[in-house]
Length: 239
Image 1 (spheres, rainbow, N blue to C red):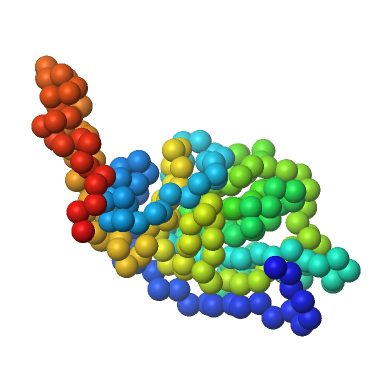
Image 2 (image 1 turned 90 degrees about the vertical axis):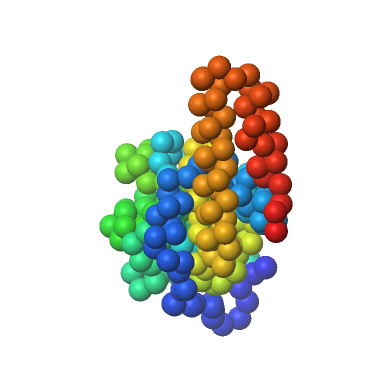
């Protein structure tokens, strides 16, 4: 899709965010345990093909979504990017989620945007595409999940098509306010309207796995411990 004619992106400034206490509880859970809980709730929330680019950091926060589209040949250059909207839209703890169509030939994020995000207390950025200035971003320890890095600028190659609209990243639909959870294993999207149920189930998965480890430590075989705590049923749908 390309921007044609008058430039008129869809910009939504208000986002319905989940309760802060629910988001804070997700921060203490791993993506594998929450992924099992998503399966129990028949929700496909695993964002594929995006890697954690800064190890040892975690994110959990409501999504601020951005959709970019490529410019057509001969069209005027880039007029703005998400940085032009962060101060009026984003809140501390939000996660920027960028749909750049999986483009791997140029970037849509760099160190200036990262510095701004850090200043505003943004929790991290998820990009279905590429970013640059990796060395500077590593120094800031800012969480980024992306397809990879490349030096080539996105200026005069892309344009904002929408902010806080439904986007697709890694094959998953993400809406503004959905919870984004990421760690060294990967990144998930948790539908905001199902967050409480998924949180409850994820805690049960975490507890069962902890009890399995404790039981093996106390002398049970792994088979016995798994049977006792129904390991192979933890992810099965219950609703």
